[in-house]
Image (tube, rainbow, N blue to C red):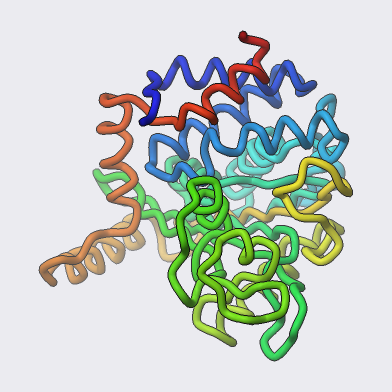
Length: 336
């Protein structure tokens, strides 16, 4: 059985839970909006289920609820946003805003975020860049969950990547992937629901294959594509952390514990203005030529289409939340 919420009702409940835990109104609003978007996109692993985690981080000092993100350094098309140890979403919104403005002025922009926290669905941050008419890429690292290829200890995070491309008279094409075989949040959902995971998703703490999500959360995720996935995870680790001064994955404790060191991880956003290169019309024509070629094959679905279809359906039907999770969020919001 589940409880269904209207989007506005769930948004308000999550916002109040975050504020009650010590987040500023702005931090709570940005965070709740991102989690609601994940629910509407049909990604509950990155939705309301994260509220107890985020509230715990604020209450226990893993995230600074009073933080106000700021542009700490800048030069031309590049800037560094300091999240101040707070939850990630307000800082990422500032970085995305800066990347859009700077790309329109300089043709290309790169915005780094340091001293940050879990930034949820990577596409949530890249899509607004495309909606502004630019090509957007988003990268983020996370606490260690995967080994370097050939290694025996967790070193890299699952390190998601997203890319969003504007189109002519159509929503942006949005690509979003985690560099583990699956997102770590899927193990969290399976563990909470008492369900097994498929082989090939994770290893236990001793490096053995497992179908137990709890053992997988205590152990390591497997990289997508083997060595290639591990190399991409390394690339993201360097883009998100070496350029920003943020903590590498192995320098941060798991997201899934309320207590521990402040995460201090990083994110990075790249925005590119097509007008600075071959020109907007050439870019849009090239995009549509490729889209037409892809759709000529029966059964092909453009990346991002399923999420957009979910948005209208889930908003209409209501967002399904497990009763125990709903009760927990209400308690955190000061109800009951």
